[in-house]
Length: 158
Image 1 (tube, rainbow, N blue to C red):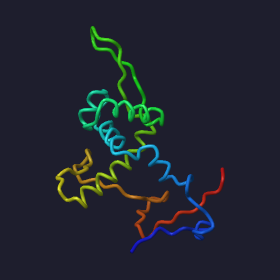
Image 2: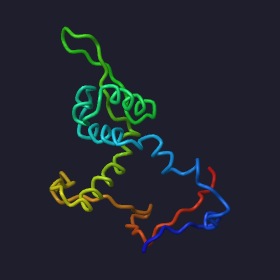
Image 3: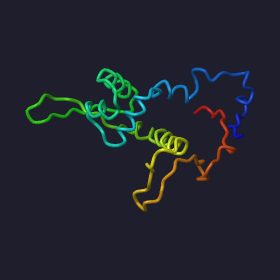
Image 4: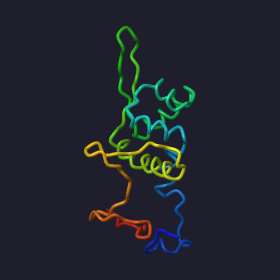
């Protein structure tokens, strides 16, 4: 069994609580719904138009509106106006830098689902050479970090 090592003051699990401070909790609060994650997936696939998000995610227009508003407010998507000839001005939704930085989370879920549900022929691949691509954790020195080598510690305040 693998477990992440908690270091320093975090090692005493009874002396502190992650509630309200945990990055996982905060991220789930932001994109913890199925529809929010699927909208982010579609944004990575190049979807930008409201009706396309609703159709491709399979949710109501009300739910699409709510999720897009939340993702814009969170800074993962940005609104950009566009206008078709003869039509009124509308907004499309594009990834921000923060939204693009969220991609590994979506791809990690993609890889886990592909591996453990074993019903998908979809694969991530490197456009440059065609080889399969994976999601992994690496340290700042470039070493791959396995689940038995991962620790959580408090960083010094900046």
